[in-house]
Amino acid sequence: VTGPSVLVNGAVRVETPVILVVNKTDAAPPDEILGHLAGAAGTLGDFAAYVPLSARTGDGADALLGEIPSRLPEGPLYYPDGVVTDQPDTFLAAELLREKLLAVAREELPHSLAVTVEEVEERPDLLVLRAVVRVERDSQKGIVIGKGGVVIKEAGTAARLEMEALLGMKVHLETHVKVDKDWQRRPEALDRLGL
Image 1 (spheres, rainbow, N blue to C red):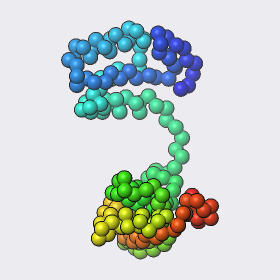
Image 2 (spheres, helix red, strand yellow):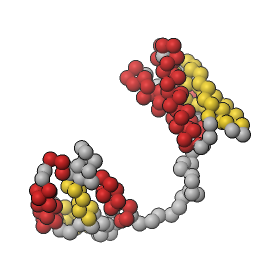
Image 3 (cartoon, rainbow, N blue to C red):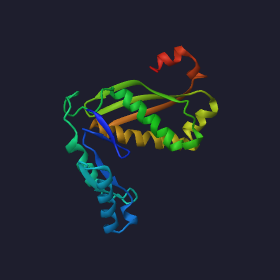
Image 4 (tube, helix red, strand yellow):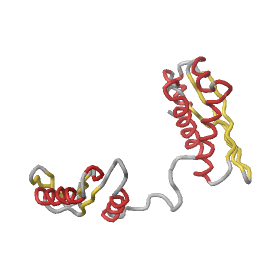
């Protein structure tokens, strides 16, 4: 929040544009919604915009998303056009694979797993990534691999497809699961993994 602020009828008044959003429009008739908007304006004062919205159905979400950017000041360009992150592709690949493994295995898989991309091979039409998934116990290795390799395969496929969309090229992802006993408790292991 920029500029001075003043408390008026329980609401903070600021120089920054404020948008009033009335939710649950799916549960009220239009005249009642207008009454709520008018009542809020009468009690709280003027707003930069008034947006009726239903979070349940999504009605009004586009209007709200249209109101927000028009009121934001343009900031400096920190990255060149087309750049979406300052992290290297290997970091993104490792994080995507870790995210997908946690999503596929759900509650079975502990968060004590680390993924690193150990090797990258760039070919004219293909990026080959060799990733290692580290767990702390043998039992966790079985969970990560899954029966018949189903967990690692499903997570790897999902991660590969997202990488291809982000990088704009074909990706071949090789994954290996390795037990690295108590890696989270060893500072040298954390340093080696970049954590």
